[in-house]
Image (cartoon, rainbow, N blue to C red; front, side):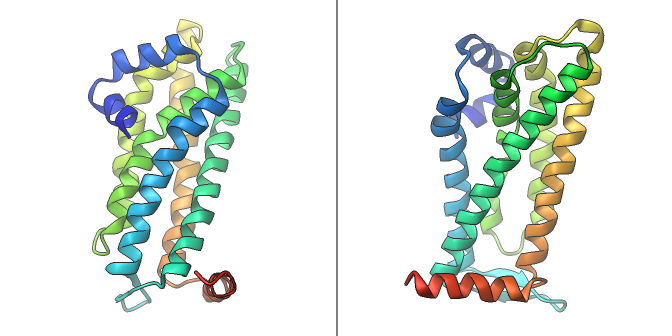
Length: 208
């Protein structure tokens, strides 16, 4: 969380430290990404249980059982980690099309830290009255802002290709995270009753 805040408030020196450290994928995953996702999931799960979420065509507040919220948040963490790897792979592929020579570590660093504002804003998903699209839009805007300063420092593309790589990376980030937000927003509105039943059954068998 601290790193995510530093990227938003002091992007240039924070990216400089990240680029200099050259941390590998697993340390970034375990010490930065996973704690940030857990923080957002705990906050959202707490809100689901204690305050509920808007559901239905005619919106009403529904509180979720603890087990249901736990299973939902675990699945969401797994999906979001997968999204980071997908974005990293896409950024690396984009870099290659711009005649760059980038490795997975560089692309994963850009994806994991670049998406930090999107994941940080999930904390505010705990509020039932706040649209999930608002938190997502703010997160994407902040991500685009910090990537503008961070992507060239980590990926080190050729100067003529840097802005094109940045624009395409932001576009792909927006599309991938927007698709995830679309699915979760529809689920929380009750659009997937079969999935609701499945999660409830799993939670009951696990005695959560």
